Image 1 (tube, one colour):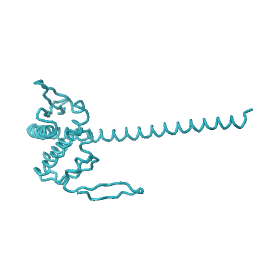
Image 2 (spheres, one colour):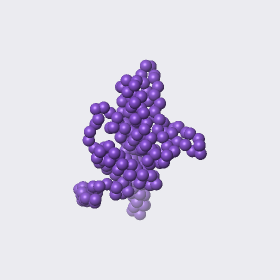
Image 3 (tube, rainbow, N blue to C red):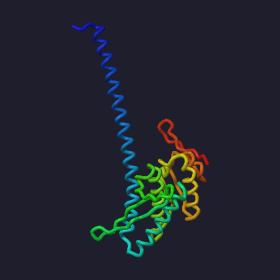
Image 4 (cartoon, rainbow, N blue to C red):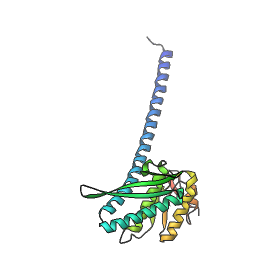
Length: 215
């Protein structure tokens, strides 16, 4: 029969095991939440691509060609403003079962060699973010009748590396001035926030959101 010391030792081991299990459970929950957030982000970008495809599908051949050229130009300018002149954007229109379909390609030039890749395969998430940004702008500016209102963005440069955040911010300012459209943006990136004419910081204090104007 176990004595008191042995029982205490077993209880201590059980508590340690329980603590480890709780830690594992917490890590799994955090991983699950992170994966869910990433999935929502991918879905959001996929919706933008799908909306552009639908726009191209539902127009006549002549209008489709014009819309494609305008979208290609706007997204190309977005990519070049952020990453440099060696980048471009191309839409390939095909027909399957009598229905037009669109494929999107990022065009880049390395040492005189032209490369075409799908946005999701190009230099990680940064290119996807910038292409998605360009497509959102193109949708607003090519849709007829023109859609009025602000350009609302949620973490538009979340995966863009620090080297390219400043060009992204400058591009948004140029777009705002050129199209006469207000940009409202939610971001954790201080460089993007610093370029705003009006900025607010939101922090949690005692389980309440405290809003402070910072610019």
